[in-house]
Image 1 (spheres, rainbow, N blue to C red):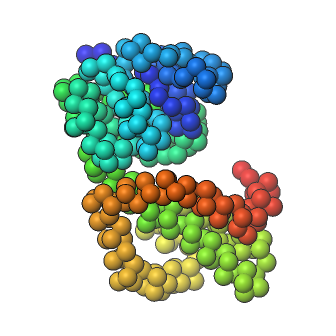
Image 2 (image 1 turned 180 degrees about the vertical axis):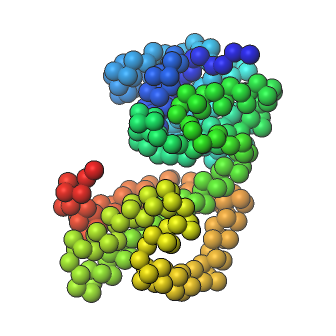
Length: 308
């Protein structure tokens, strides 16, 4: 069995750039599929990637690193050779559109790093730690595919795992963690805290440090020390306050909300809501909400003095 020595990149956004650089520096030949008028062609050349405009010109898997919402239409508009091997960085598009059923002549793999693009790249350069999961459930030869995927993960810079899961498990975990914790809870809770402090006479600099900047410090402590040690490291007042507040904040209604979010993900209703959101272009409203917020202004004023 030979490991993959060549891959074809579909998409040169943040994740695409991180994957391309890591894999290229690990010795793989990285092609990049770009249309003639693509503004990314100059970047691809700068990164030393071979630009191709014919999707049959590859001898390795296709890395689908375009946004999840665009993968279905991309496959509709760009027929691939029979037997093509597709590697998804997230499972959402396959689950939403049943792509394994729609395209049974392709092999569908999952390799999902649990890191944003900048961290994936930085950890590779600094020999840091990055976790990932993978799936070979739609492979014709699972043992061979498992070995190839884990080797590709190693070249990408994965140090924890990759751990074998299903597409559905990764999709469910990814979407629920984003909605109920990482993107739906932490930033919005930080803004609520900031706004409450400002309303009650706290200077914006202090409010920003407490409500936004220290989130990173707590996140680092959580990752480095684990749950038990975190609550040994924080102050007694922080420990008591956190415990008492959690009983107020995370009540029965909160748990019911999380269960509802999970049910909508597993039942497909979330994808329906998301598609309507995209069609109505409400993403611009969310961006405007944050860009015009007082906490964004505080960030702009303080970012240089607080930068690493």
